[in-house]
Structure formats: structure tokens, C-alpha cells
Figure 1 (cartoon, rainbow, N blue to C red):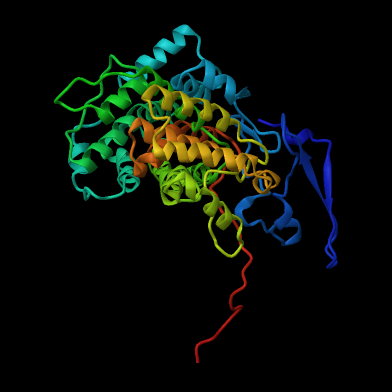
Figure 2 (tube, helix red, strand yellow):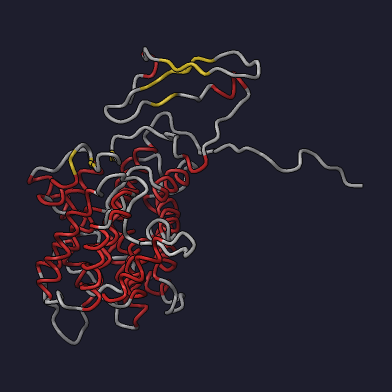
Length: 431
């Protein structure tokens, strides 16, 4: 961890209300903006900082993921996302996020074998699943299933024990595809499909999603690579809303499955994990290529409240580095499935072209983001729209558990307790 005691840089905060000036340590990370340590601010001045959305607040120290939004860079443990997505599998990336280094061949084989041996879920979980309505949103079901894992696997939820933490991490990564597939099969009334230990992680997931007892399931390598890349690109994304939720929930010392369930609930929000679902819904609302012009005009109209979904990003002020990779994958999938002339996909490609050339969107840096392409790819693969966020949660589970582990082992971690600027009644008495 950072040697805070030996910092040589300080920031001076001055006040106009007579409070004496205060010197606060200024720390530098390995890359990125410096941070001002304000932990002594309240004790020395009686004042808090005010930062809605925590947009200017570093709530933790982390070595896992780094984003430079201005340059359009995303790195896992220092490795650019482009290199990882092109040269490694999702389970390699899982190992990297959890362990800090990419696995050698022996470590890779051992990790893959360990994950594979844990893909089955407790048989009674299917009876728990049947308690949900079949028309329930899959994210509601998944939130319940993950939270319930603490009840089905209570033997490894002691957060103080590093061995139990590792077991829970493996269980989460291994069983998440099984639970996602179970929630999908249940919603459409098909038999649940057990994992197959002879398949890769992503092959196994696709088989559990799309096979049925009536016929053999045929593996399509192009689709497997595409989905594996989606998993890699969504595996972690620094201190976003759901990750911060996992850390905040976990800071109380609750078990990892409860913390991850909280993260899934946060991810469900349309401003977060629901973006790719919103992008595809937007395309369906536009309807056809000849209506794009009308739609673009409405987007530009400040009074219309119509938004261009799947373009621009809160963090990336340049191109989303994941979008280029997903764009390549998108076209590979459409070509492999012969869908280049599908009306919805033609609409998406034309909208992408127009928006990418329109000065209105260029000047506002509204470039296509990863959600725009991943929604198209998932639909082409056969994943229904309401399952998109579950796919996101499956991929992000490794990032959440890695961030949770980092927080638990941080000697400075404390239970989260944000402050407030109170503007209600100061004091009232009952008559």
C-alpha cells in the first residue's frame, strides 16, 4: 500500500469564515490524478466536503483497474484491454484480476480445472428458483439467487479466512453462468441444463442457455469468441456504481454473496447495466433506416427529451476503447450468421455511420460505445433483450469479487459512512 507517512506534497485549504488554513497531504498514484487526503478535515475544522455522486472523491486505493477517460484507455492490472481481449480468454482475465498476474500454462490449467469443477449448483437451488414467477425479470431472479448462495454455501462465508474467501470467489465465477442460464430456461419453460465439464467456460454457458433435450447443441466458434470477448470487456471498470455498491456493502463485513447481490441490484438500473438493453430498444423504436433522419432531428431538439442511446460515455471523453473491439466482433458475428441484411442490424450500422459523421455528435464526443455493439451481438447470438444485463452481471462478477477481496485485505478499510449537507428543519417542538 502507499506510504502515506512519507509524503512530501501538501495542499493548503484556506477559509473565508475565519477558520485557520489547513495543510492536507497530497498523494500521487502510479498514474492518474493526485488525491488530497481530507480525512482530518472534520476533526480539525468541523467541516465536511460536498461531492454529489462522488465525482471528485477517491473512496479507496486500488491496484486492479485504471481508466483514462480523456485518452480512451482501460487497463486491467496494467494491461491494455485491447491486448487482453485479442490474446487471452475470459478465465485468463479472471485469474489476472484475482491474482494480479496472468497465469502461466500450469496455473492456467489448474485454474480452469478448479472453476470447471465448481460449475454445478446445489440441487435444491432449482426448487428455490421455482418460487419465482416465470414472468419475473431475470435480473430480479438473479439478485435473489446470488443472495441465496450464502444459504446454500454457508461453509465458506467467513470473510476473515483467506481460504474461505478464495473458495467463495471460485464458486461465484463458476456458478454464475449456471445460475444465469437457469433463470433464462425457467423464464421460457424449458428444462434446466446441467453444466458439461468437457467444454470451455463460454462454450458451457452457451450450451446451458441454448441446448435442449431434443437435439444436439452445435458449438459455433465465432459466437463463442464473441461472447467470451463480451465477458472480457465487461469484467471490471474501476469504481463504478455497482462496484462501489459491492465495496460499500462489503465494508460492513457481510458475506461476499450478499455484497455481490447488492451490486447486481445496482447494475440493474437503466443508467448503468441497462444501457445495452436501452440501445437495442431504441433501434426497435426507430423501426427502419428511412426513419433515422427524423430520429436524429428529435435527438437534436432540446425539447424532445429523446436520447441517442449507446453513444457517448460518462467516463470516456474520447472513444470507448472497448467499442472498437466490439465493433469488429459485431461484424464478424453478423457475417458468420448471414445477418448483414437483417433490417434491425442494417438500421444499427446506418445509425452508427450517420452519427459518427454528424458534426453535432462529433463535437459532443458522442461516439458509439461498447453497449451499442454488445447489444447487437447478443441479439444476433440469440440472447433476449431482458437477459442482457444478466450477461453483464456474469462478466462483472469477477471484477466485483476482486474489488471486494482488495477491500477486505486493505488495512485502512472502514465501514462506509458518507456524510450529508442537511437542509431540513433545524429543530421543531410539538405543541
